Image (tube, rainbow, N blue to C red; front, top):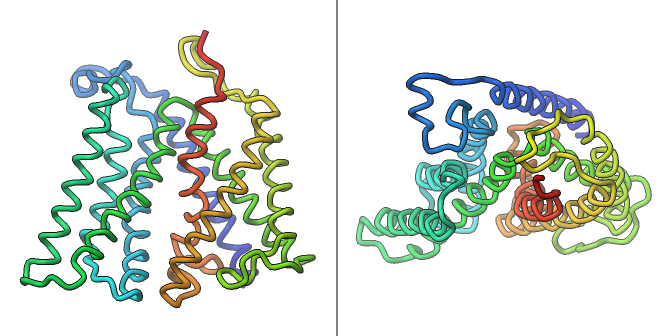
Length: 312
């Protein structure tokens, strides 16, 4: 188990870094002619939309996670349609990414709300089309849950990417997963007192403490490293964060990430399964990797947005 974890983990990290490098490179491309007309609704139509590579990755990851979520629903005797659940997750992600920055707040809220209503109505029609009424509401609610959990929550990382460097995404994920790793190894070494034995027997308070300390250290190091990022124009938010912000991010991301892990444990234990799937040797499924970052994403967006120095 540990051997496969140590192999799969670095491979995923290398893949993510490759996507981030590609995403950063796309920021340097300048468009002309037809392409500037296509993106005329943007503040800088001569540039590709920020986070394009990450968005494409999300469109691949979201349906894979949706299929695993369907297996959890089915184990709880909830009707599912994998294609509908995957479509709902992708729609949530698309809405998070595609609404223009200049859109009025009320219009943005209306667009997201409309998307959720469309998904809910489509679910009701799909699950009741054979004149079936049993379990329809639960099934429709499960599809909407997938849209929010896998689409809108993951979309917060893309929202953060719109305003900042792609390396911020690395920072958020790095701090969160550093806590997971620190908690795992600390718990194995000195863990004695169970946190929630009825839900996740392997988690200990000692492990959580080790995870928080690891995350704080990662946050401080990343704050120091943020000074190495390329300088941004003065009319845009800076990508440099202070040490205290890095430390606060470490604590907050660690605690929230562990809550996300426990939330997924709750879903899996209710379904009577240990891992969401076996697609990633040593790590389990896509949901087993995403559970912490998904919960952290909205908190990271607001925390980093509120603490980011205003443009000059």
